[in-house]
Image (cartoon, rainbow, N blue to C red; front, side, top):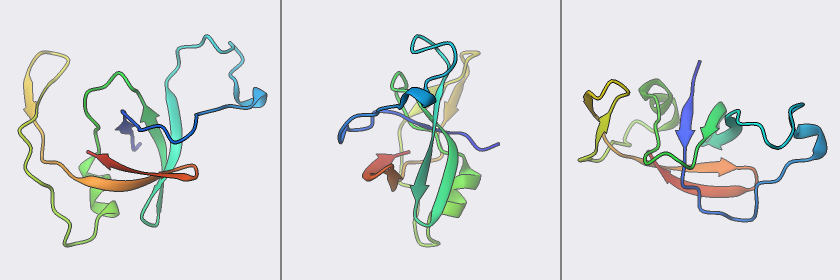
Length: 109
């Protein structure tokens, strides 16, 4: 299962849903929002939108499929704390063009 987390999307319009897309429990549900996005020629399913996060997470296996051979991760000084409180260093930073619906966003992972 691939799961990508994306937050802090600059709004180009609004995120809207039709009545048939609202879950049975109604608008007040607290289930996560997963969407389908496109990066390069790849469609990526199960992308989690969570504006409460302070960073975007992209699995290395997915990154390998999305970036050209010459694309490299930039240095990052971010240190992430896991749920158990332990520190984890990130591998680096990269900004990718992500198509969400009709809007293109440059998102840093």
